[in-house]
Amino acid sequence: MNTEFVDYKYKKNYLTNVIFKIDFSTLNYEEFVDEFSKKIKDSFPLVEKKIIKEHKAEIKEEGSVLSESSDNCYVFFDSNKERKVSLFKNYMAVELFKYKDMNDFRETVSFVFDIYNKLYKNVDYRRLGVRYINQIVLEKGNPFIWKDYISSYLTSVSDSFFNRDGSLSRSMSQVVLNKDDYKLNFNFGMFNSEFPAKISRKEFVLDYDCYTEFVDGDSVHEILDKFNHEIKFLFEKSINNGLRKNMGVISDEIL
Image (cartoon, rainbow, N blue to C red; front, side):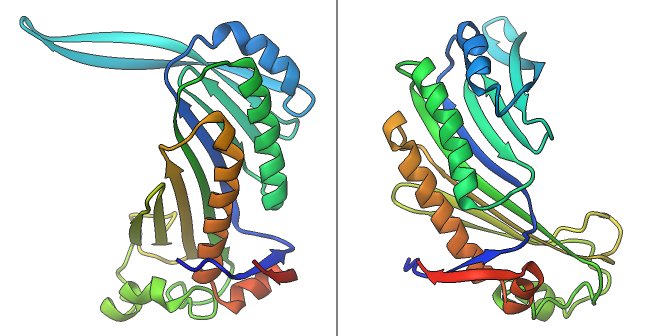
């Protein structure tokens, strides 16, 4: 895929969740939690501890045997609870609820991951994912007409196949790309926050999720940049100038 595109910078966006998550084989993380907390405290001063219970079923000669285990999940927030870091026995995640720009996201992830990577040695990384969820809500206009805002390729099912049928209560589609070294799940459409009621609000979701199982500690930053670029490319391909006008273009450059 040729991913050269115009990289627009906007005054605002419709992102509700931007997530970095790295999975690894189960490790003894409790002994490092206090040190990890101290090192990120200036940026993430609020700490919560949650208990996550897991249920397992094993098939044995005498029948199925159910077991339950519980482990602590540590959640760190910034002072406004607009950013969150989660640390569990087999994953670490950084999530932004208020997104500024790609550089800010990268700096936040790099700050947290670099501290984590220094504390936890010889980690067996299993998976790295980056996800951007756009929930586009417009205050006025026909909830089925998106031609000024969203590419017609993404609305063709509701536009052409169902002819904008007023009885629609949800219209979501999924595309999965299986690249050589990563996968991408793209979910898009009129999710309808009032489902199962009929669609009455002008809402559209663009949800991009890139992930790979080819990852080690030294490649995290490179993969993060790659996924950010791929998702940004698809986002710009998904929208039209009406939405760009709503978001307010600050600058643009060819990437």
